[in-house]
Image 1 (cartoon, rainbow, N blue to C red):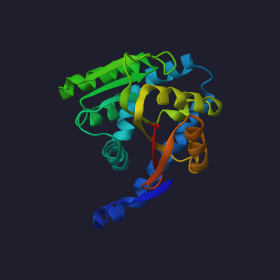
Image 2: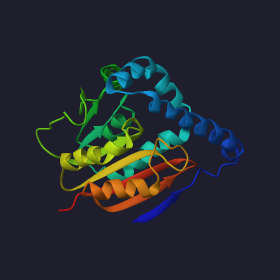
Image 3: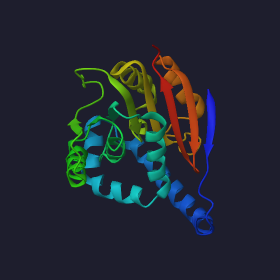
Amino acid sequence: MSETMVSEDHAPLQKLFRPVIKALRTAYIQGTTVVKLLPSERAIQLYYKYRRKSYDLQWSMDPGYRKGLKNLVDLVIEDNDMVLDVGCGTASATIVAADKAREVVGIDLSPDMIELAVEKVKKKGLNNTCLLATSVEEYCPEQPFDKVISSFMIPHVKPELRPAIYSCMFNFLKSGGTVGLFGSRGEVCDVYETRQEIEENLTRSGFTDIQLHDVYDIYRIAVAKKPE
Protein backbone atom coordinates (compact mmCIF):
# COMPACT_ATOMS: atom_id res chain seq x y z
CA MET A 1 0.00 0.00 0.00
CA SER A 2 1.60 3.23 -1.12
CA GLU A 3 1.08 6.89 -0.35
CA THR A 4 1.43 9.84 -2.68
CA MET A 5 1.15 13.42 -1.52
CA VAL A 6 -0.28 15.86 -4.07
CA SER A 7 0.53 19.47 -3.23
CA GLU A 8 -1.25 22.71 -3.98
CA ASP A 9 0.18 24.89 -6.76
CA HIS A 10 2.95 27.20 -5.60
CA ALA A 11 2.03 30.33 -7.60
CA PRO A 12 2.40 33.43 -5.34
CA LEU A 13 -1.26 34.47 -5.59
CA GLN A 14 -2.49 30.97 -4.82
CA LYS A 15 -0.12 30.72 -1.85
CA LEU A 16 -1.57 33.99 -0.52
CA PHE A 17 -5.16 32.75 -0.62
CA ARG A 18 -4.42 29.14 0.35
CA PRO A 19 -5.24 29.57 4.08
CA VAL A 20 -8.62 31.10 3.20
CA ILE A 21 -9.40 28.34 0.70
CA LYS A 22 -8.34 25.71 3.23
CA ALA A 23 -10.60 27.19 5.91
CA LEU A 24 -13.61 27.32 3.58
CA ARG A 25 -12.91 23.82 2.28
CA THR A 26 -12.66 22.40 5.78
CA ALA A 27 -15.81 24.20 6.93
CA TYR A 28 -17.78 22.80 4.03
CA ILE A 29 -16.53 19.26 4.64
CA GLN A 30 -17.41 19.54 8.32
CA GLY A 31 -20.94 20.40 7.18
CA THR A 32 -21.17 16.93 5.70
CA THR A 33 -21.82 15.65 9.22
CA VAL A 34 -25.48 16.51 8.61
CA VAL A 35 -25.80 13.08 6.99
CA LYS A 36 -25.63 11.59 10.51
CA LEU A 37 -29.08 13.08 11.07
CA LEU A 38 -30.62 11.41 8.01
CA PRO A 39 -32.16 8.16 9.27
CA SER A 40 -33.17 6.55 5.96
CA GLU A 41 -32.69 6.46 2.20
CA ARG A 42 -35.93 8.43 1.85
CA ALA A 43 -34.56 11.14 4.12
CA ILE A 44 -31.42 11.34 1.98
CA GLN A 45 -33.53 11.66 -1.16
CA LEU A 46 -35.55 14.52 0.35
CA TYR A 47 -32.42 16.26 1.57
CA TYR A 48 -30.86 16.27 -1.88
CA LYS A 49 -34.09 17.29 -3.55
CA TYR A 50 -33.61 20.68 -1.90
CA ARG A 51 -29.81 20.68 -1.78
CA ARG A 52 -29.02 19.85 -5.40
CA LYS A 53 -28.61 23.44 -6.68
CA SER A 54 -26.46 24.66 -3.80
CA TYR A 55 -24.47 21.40 -3.88
CA ASP A 56 -22.88 22.23 -7.23
CA LEU A 57 -22.39 25.88 -6.31
CA GLN A 58 -20.43 25.09 -3.17
CA TRP A 59 -18.18 22.52 -4.86
CA SER A 60 -17.54 24.88 -7.80
CA MET A 61 -15.95 27.37 -5.41
CA ASP A 62 -13.15 24.94 -4.49
CA PRO A 63 -10.40 24.54 -7.11
CA GLY A 64 -9.02 21.60 -5.12
CA TYR A 65 -12.23 19.66 -5.67
CA ARG A 66 -12.08 20.12 -9.44
CA LYS A 67 -8.42 19.16 -9.52
CA GLY A 68 -9.16 16.17 -7.29
CA LEU A 69 -11.72 14.87 -9.77
CA LYS A 70 -9.19 15.24 -12.56
CA ASN A 71 -6.58 13.42 -10.45
CA LEU A 72 -9.07 10.60 -9.90
CA VAL A 73 -9.75 10.22 -13.62
CA ASP A 74 -6.06 10.46 -14.53
CA LEU A 75 -5.16 7.77 -11.98
CA VAL A 76 -7.90 5.32 -12.87
CA ILE A 77 -9.42 5.73 -16.33
CA GLU A 78 -7.90 4.84 -19.69
CA ASP A 79 -9.14 5.36 -23.23
CA ASN A 80 -11.86 2.93 -24.28
CA ASP A 81 -12.83 2.08 -20.70
CA MET A 82 -16.39 1.27 -19.72
CA VAL A 83 -16.86 3.15 -16.43
CA LEU A 84 -19.46 3.13 -13.67
CA ASP A 85 -19.82 6.20 -11.42
CA VAL A 86 -21.43 5.07 -8.17
CA GLY A 87 -23.36 7.76 -6.31
CA CYS A 88 -22.83 10.13 -9.23
CA GLY A 89 -24.89 12.98 -7.76
CA THR A 90 -25.09 15.81 -10.28
CA ALA A 91 -22.60 14.03 -12.58
CA SER A 92 -19.52 16.13 -11.83
CA ALA A 93 -17.21 13.09 -11.91
CA THR A 94 -19.25 11.48 -14.69
CA ILE A 95 -18.63 14.45 -16.97
CA VAL A 96 -14.89 14.51 -16.28
CA ALA A 97 -14.65 10.76 -16.86
CA ALA A 98 -16.68 10.96 -20.08
CA ASP A 99 -14.00 13.12 -21.67
CA LYS A 100 -11.66 10.13 -21.52
CA ALA A 101 -13.72 6.93 -21.29
CA ARG A 102 -15.64 5.17 -24.04
CA GLU A 103 -18.82 5.19 -21.96
CA VAL A 104 -19.79 6.20 -18.43
CA VAL A 105 -22.86 5.02 -16.53
CA GLY A 106 -23.81 7.09 -13.49
CA ILE A 107 -26.13 5.82 -10.77
CA ASP A 108 -27.52 7.67 -7.77
CA LEU A 109 -30.19 7.08 -5.16
CA SER A 110 -31.71 10.56 -5.66
CA PRO A 111 -33.95 11.04 -8.73
CA ASP A 112 -33.67 14.80 -8.25
CA MET A 113 -29.88 14.69 -8.44
CA ILE A 114 -30.12 12.51 -11.54
CA GLU A 115 -32.53 15.03 -13.10
CA LEU A 116 -29.96 17.80 -12.63
CA ALA A 117 -27.19 15.48 -13.83
CA VAL A 118 -29.09 14.84 -17.08
CA GLU A 119 -29.43 18.59 -17.63
CA LYS A 120 -25.69 19.11 -17.12
CA VAL A 121 -24.75 16.28 -19.47
CA LYS A 122 -27.06 17.66 -22.18
CA LYS A 123 -25.50 21.11 -21.86
CA LYS A 124 -22.07 19.53 -22.32
CA GLY A 125 -23.28 17.73 -25.45
CA LEU A 126 -22.01 14.37 -24.23
CA ASN A 127 -23.37 11.29 -25.97
CA ASN A 128 -21.40 8.60 -24.12
CA THR A 129 -23.17 8.73 -20.75
CA CYS A 130 -26.17 7.00 -19.18
CA LEU A 131 -27.66 8.20 -15.90
CA LEU A 132 -29.94 6.09 -13.71
CA ALA A 133 -31.78 6.67 -10.43
CA THR A 134 -31.20 3.49 -8.44
CA SER A 135 -29.56 2.27 -5.28
CA VAL A 136 -26.21 0.51 -5.40
CA GLU A 137 -27.73 -2.68 -4.04
CA GLU A 138 -30.50 -2.79 -6.66
CA TYR A 139 -28.38 -1.94 -9.69
CA CYS A 140 -27.82 -4.91 -12.01
CA PRO A 141 -25.56 -4.07 -14.98
CA GLU A 142 -25.80 -6.16 -18.13
CA GLN A 143 -22.02 -6.57 -18.18
CA PRO A 144 -19.12 -5.80 -15.85
CA PHE A 145 -17.13 -2.57 -16.08
CA ASP A 146 -13.45 -1.89 -16.63
CA LYS A 147 -13.45 0.78 -13.92
CA VAL A 148 -15.68 1.90 -11.08
CA ILE A 149 -15.36 5.39 -9.61
CA SER A 150 -17.15 7.11 -6.75
CA SER A 151 -16.78 10.57 -5.22
CA PHE A 152 -18.16 11.77 -1.89
CA MET A 153 -20.76 9.02 -1.72
CA ILE A 154 -19.42 6.98 1.20
CA PRO A 155 -20.40 9.39 4.04
CA HIS A 156 -24.04 8.71 3.12
CA VAL A 157 -23.53 5.03 3.93
CA LYS A 158 -23.60 3.91 7.56
CA PRO A 159 -20.14 2.64 8.62
CA GLU A 160 -21.30 -0.94 9.18
CA LEU A 161 -22.72 -1.09 5.63
CA ARG A 162 -19.67 0.24 3.80
CA PRO A 163 -17.97 -3.12 3.22
CA ALA A 164 -21.18 -4.32 1.54
CA ILE A 165 -21.20 -1.28 -0.76
CA TYR A 166 -17.56 -1.91 -1.68
CA SER A 167 -18.47 -5.55 -2.34
CA CYS A 168 -21.09 -4.32 -4.82
CA MET A 169 -18.41 -2.22 -6.54
CA PHE A 170 -16.16 -5.28 -6.58
CA ASN A 171 -18.89 -7.29 -8.29
CA PHE A 172 -19.53 -4.54 -10.84
CA LEU A 173 -15.93 -4.87 -12.08
CA LYS A 174 -14.31 -7.20 -14.57
CA SER A 175 -11.48 -9.35 -13.24
CA GLY A 176 -8.43 -7.10 -13.11
CA GLY A 177 -10.61 -3.99 -12.98
CA THR A 178 -9.92 -0.91 -10.88
CA VAL A 179 -11.95 1.05 -8.35
CA GLY A 180 -11.16 4.72 -7.68
CA LEU A 181 -12.65 6.63 -4.74
CA PHE A 182 -12.44 10.37 -4.09
CA GLY A 183 -13.51 11.97 -0.83
CA SER A 184 -12.35 13.60 2.34
CA ARG A 185 -10.39 12.00 5.18
CA GLY A 186 -11.88 10.55 8.33
CA GLU A 187 -9.04 12.20 10.20
CA VAL A 188 -10.61 15.55 9.21
CA CYS A 189 -14.34 14.75 9.32
CA ASP A 190 -15.61 11.62 11.01
CA VAL A 191 -18.36 10.75 8.50
CA TYR A 192 -15.56 9.80 6.10
CA GLU A 193 -13.14 6.89 6.46
CA THR A 194 -9.74 7.09 8.08
CA ARG A 195 -6.77 5.59 6.27
CA GLN A 196 -7.06 2.42 8.33
CA GLU A 197 -10.82 2.12 7.80
CA ILE A 198 -10.72 2.43 4.03
CA GLU A 199 -7.87 -0.07 3.76
CA GLU A 200 -9.74 -2.54 5.96
CA ASN A 201 -13.08 -2.09 4.17
CA LEU A 202 -11.57 -2.49 0.70
CA THR A 203 -9.58 -5.53 1.79
CA ARG A 204 -12.67 -7.17 3.34
CA SER A 205 -14.48 -6.64 0.04
CA GLY A 206 -11.80 -8.52 -1.92
CA PHE A 207 -9.71 -5.67 -3.31
CA THR A 208 -5.92 -5.78 -3.45
CA ASP A 209 -3.07 -3.42 -4.43
CA ILE A 210 -4.61 -0.58 -2.42
CA GLN A 211 -3.03 2.84 -2.93
CA LEU A 212 -4.00 5.94 -0.96
CA HIS A 213 -3.20 9.40 -2.31
CA ASP A 214 -3.63 12.38 0.02
CA VAL A 215 -4.72 15.33 -2.11
CA TYR A 216 -4.43 18.96 -0.97
CA ASP A 217 -5.47 19.78 2.59
CA ILE A 218 -8.26 17.35 3.35
CA TYR A 219 -8.98 15.13 0.35
CA ARG A 220 -7.98 11.57 -0.37
CA ILE A 221 -8.08 9.29 -3.42
CA ALA A 222 -8.07 5.52 -2.97
CA VAL A 223 -7.28 3.16 -5.84
CA ALA A 224 -7.57 -0.64 -5.63
CA LYS A 225 -7.70 -3.67 -7.91
CA LYS A 226 -10.01 -6.63 -8.34
CA PRO A 227 -7.69 -9.62 -8.74
CA GLU A 228 -7.49 -11.40 -12.09
